[in-house]
Length: 382
Ligand SMILES: *Cc1c(COP(=O)(O)O)cnc(C)c1O
Image (tube, rainbow, N blue to C red; front, side):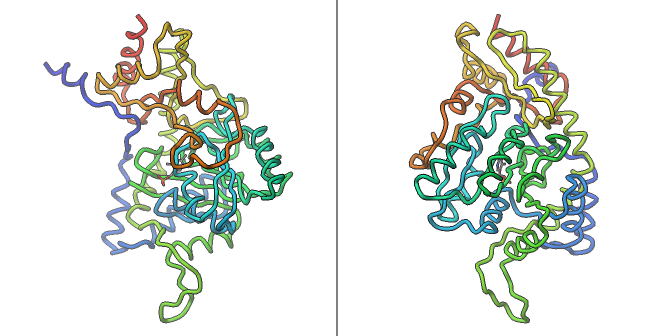
């Protein structure tokens, strides 16, 4: 029975989706023996990103985490410093703060975007100043592709003259006031990990309009070699550059990026039509001026209104049908590893974690796949 087999095949949360031309660039790298963390694909991928984002400078790197780390180094974040960070995010946003011996100061989210709350941000800065320390940077995140409230975040940041590092790892293709996410701060970072909207199998980018800083990022990411015939080093370097093979995949993926955004937005619309009539199930809509790439479609499940059905009931139901879904990010201030870090906010991020579920959202999902997911959830409510 072919049908049965088809209907039980695994549906992933967000899996790699190749467009077809990636191999052309990878083959070029092989044919010309540019199998190194430099070469024409690295330069080409950087140009493609600059053009797409309308930004002057980019350094492609081994990961988004590496990009955040370099941004912190370029802002002179060091031992004993404090950096403000959105609590509702993936740990990779916060970990590099600790790599530098600094302390993350976590801030709650706001209900309209699920991203950094500008009011709590201000409270956090004022309180840290009272305690005698000025935060060295602010890291807002465009989670699930939804742009953060940049206008108000920038206002606060400028008032206190604190630079912004924008974590746009999940938001390539998203826009805020018609400008690409990642291009608002002193630095922006992107990720091309396997589950992101485009992938190089693993990789990231640091972007900025400040050419000198990006040049320095390239230097630091290739072991910080001074110009000398021998190997000479005046500062500590890192091995963070992207390989020419990975960049080749990236160049091919850039050709299908807009198509991936359209498809992911289509996935959101599909679920919204199929599920928003269910009592107690809510979706996050775009505030005016925001354009989300809808990297992942998330639902909030209020057990008070669903008759007791929780997001965990839905997750287990989907799992039993070989469908992957995942709770929203567990806030950093609730993670054991960050138990001692200061936190400013109430319980929004925590509530999102408790009630939220990410549904399969890959750009490669078929309408049959989406129907299978939706039907499975609708059945639970009957
Ligand atoms: C994926 C991700 C990162 C890290 O990117 P890597 O390329 O996996 O190192 C950082 N922040 C957020 C919000 C992410 O989702």
